[in-house]
Length: 362
Image (cartoon, rainbow, N blue to C red; front, side, top):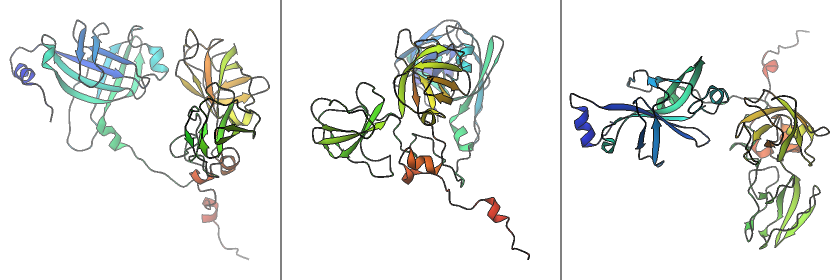
């Protein structure tokens, strides 16, 4: 049941209404945008922890009717608006910056904003389409998640994604801390024990091989693979970093470019990984926080090719990070990531060919 303040309830029961519909959009990168159907901008605090938000009227938003149904059927509606570079641009839509953004739809009395809000819908952005200078975004209600089928099937390859909660591999381990207790990592289980990265990236991460407490100042790290570093009562062993930092050197196009990188990340490790444009640098990259899968990486030439082009121009000097890839095979899980205990596949389950075998008729 929706609740409103007594003052707003009295206004809703009246004959003459002064209502405006507002939309609050919160993208996954934390950007918050507000829009209203009113002919003037409104500043309103929805009391959801984000404080006052300015709801602009310049974009001319309209919405379809909102209807509720009993049961778990998803309640969806469409929001239509004008593409505006100061508000929502088609390039941002195509770049995926609004994918799965949270939307809250509510009404207010624009002549008495202190009466609070009548909350109408809350959900996520679904399908978005752009037609000329107009876009239509589908708002999927919270019940939409109940219509999704969730399950797993047997497969010889791993069903986890490298670095997720099922996998446990630390693509970007925590930064080393002074005077901190560190523990050993179990063999074949990358999800346990202590792995750290230095405060300044040096193409290495370090695994605890002797439990203890770190020193009051960061040690001078021994960088050769397998080399050990003494740090207070802790002993660290150098491993190749699973996420590298670099900058764009030369650009062929938005899909292929070379990097300024002095490390030794091999071709096989980074091929199939994910490249992310980071906020380091001035000005920040046009593709800030956007990601794309890596089709190929060549250490000899520092050339990287993405599966798809980035939506915005890639420029020399753009800062990027590249995380390792995984072909989801048991052999790579064991040899490269030492993570067999978390392997989410069944490589020894007989396949369909065994099911269709027949006895030898001879």
